[in-house]
Length: 237
Image (cartoon, rainbow, N blue to C red; front, top):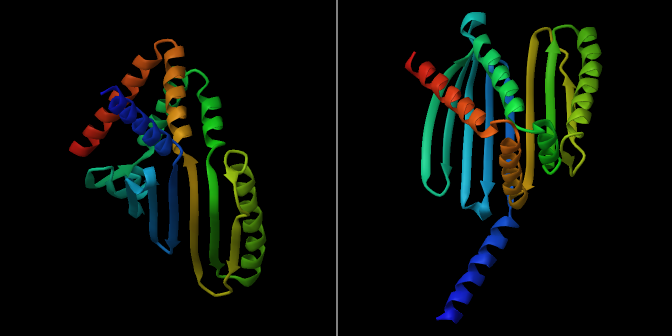
């Protein structure tokens, strides 16, 4: 009996070590052509046992009052298959509320900025392609803007490299289109990964940091409660 119990414990430990040594993979693609936008995020974890798919097929600016209209499609296997569609508007009030939530999270968690930096430093970017085609309707202006856009892209990549690990050199493209009409299209293809073991470790550290703050756990509960209440109010409106 003791032998079978020992074998069972060893098997559980082996499975735990195997799962924790696995990696969480993500694939983010962003496309914008004219007025059409599409953002897709795929997350795969635990050797494919967990698969999440998020698609943002609609992103429409409806004026300063109504803000940005967003449609989100969510599907996944984790391990129960699920599917959910959601539509909402993001306005100035929503942005202000999320800034306030961020301030509250900083107060509720000891060293949240440091935790964020340390966690992001373990994210490995294995692929980053960013291509942009555009025309300003004027050849001289388009040529000048192309140089400025190159500089802007490399500045953004330089800033991002301070937070995450770039495993390969990013491939950036700027294609000026010399036409009489104004046009713009951009495409971003990004793949990355993080250790499942470190992701779990980061979550545990976040809980510890929340407990170190003055009433941190209670403050986090209040934040989550406020967010859920706000989402219900928007859904009912």
